[in-house]
Amino acid sequence: MPLIPMGDVPAWFADHLGPDRLCVAHRDESVSWADMAIRSNRRAFALKRLGVAPDDFVALVLPNSNAVFEFAFAVWKLGATPCVISPRLPADELGSVLDLARPRAIVADDAAIRRATGALPTDLGLDEEPGETVPSVVGSRWKAITSGGSSGRPKVIVDLAPGAVDPDEALLDLPRGGVVLNAGPLHHNAPFRFMCGALFRGNSVVSMPRFDAEEALRLIEHHRVEWANLVPTMMSRIWGLPQEVRSRYDLSSLRAVWHTAAPMPAWLKEAWIDWIGPEKVWEIYGGTERQGNTVISGHDWLTHRGSVGRPINCDIRILGEGGEVLPPGEVGEVHFLPHTGPGSTYRYLGAEPQRSADGYETIGDFGRVDEEGYLYIADRRTDLIIRGGVNIYPAEIENAMSEHPGVDDAVVIGLPDRDLGAVVHAIVARSADGAVPVTAEALHAFLATRLAKYKLPVAYEFAEPPLRDEAGKVRRSRLRAERIAGRADAEGVPADV
Image (tube, rainbow, N blue to C red; front, side, top):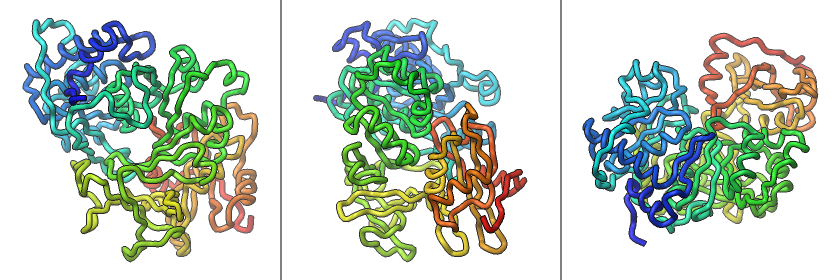
């Protein structure tokens, strides 16, 4: 099928699926394909009049709403690039991101952000009748996303795929003309990428303004959702609902639940596989940069526990500290080479890629591959804790803590220590119901049955949730800096425990 300019997608599906077919819904506000074509055209007309031109950036500083997609289609119509940004960023960080992107226009829902940045309101163009259809231009880059912030330095990742799509092109087994659920913030890469991919295949997107575990189940039943993208934190909260609540909803329409963004504890993955079936539980691993991805099904995971899958459209190699290629089974830094060639998928604003002479790149994760080519992630290089010369991976400790019934979430960081170099510090959010009391001593004893002694935290800090952002990611650099500055109160454990 010939490629369709992204800006023409709403009109194309209004013609092929019917004008009244649902395009996007948030709460009680829904937009049909025909309405999406009209509203995005009006917004495109207004943006064009304000000077937006091909290859300009337009910053969308918006919460989850139909307006995100209306403006995205409008920007694509003009051959420009939507740069989706969290409206919850601190003012300094938002300013840094805008300085990097230098957008031609900014759209914001929050009045304070509009005052500070001169952003346009979300009703832009809706009261106008252009009297003409703005002709679509195929831009050279289809989206720009701000980084998750794990490094502590803001950057913008510009996807170099052009602004045209093939409605028949498959992405992660998305249905064609079905219904998909978005539970995550659209200013993060996976929700934005997957939901746009769903729309490009004519699916109806049912999106949540904010995640709520039981509401997600209700929406799946009510809309007969076939495909959903979740993060492990969301899956943990759904699984943590009382069984009588989970069993109240009919989830038989679900064909696939994809999870990404953060490590999935093995016990939680097993629980979901047992609940909805291994054929419906899928995982994708990779960076926003698209240098490479791995994918694994629930069936494959059961025979390769802990793996994030085998590579798709890329090659992977594991490098040691000296840059040597490591054999299967040895842990080193994971490097990708996309089959489309080095540097073909993205460019940074505000950073430089870590790219070798032969084009391989890393996103900073440690891992290993087995003899069959399955990848296993240990942790991020920047999160690694080196205690007395021994490597400790926070994800392993966090996964162990998540098995405790009184723990809702946990984050592990390394704090400086004069003797050992670094020690393990645990930040713990207790379960909301408080049914199982948790103390530092009890949690330490629990972990002592699961971890080697040198991996055990020396202190446990109990904090209010959430410990992660809306996309399920942890800003460890910020947590570490705050605790180094203030040495937050924590419950220590005896040295000989």
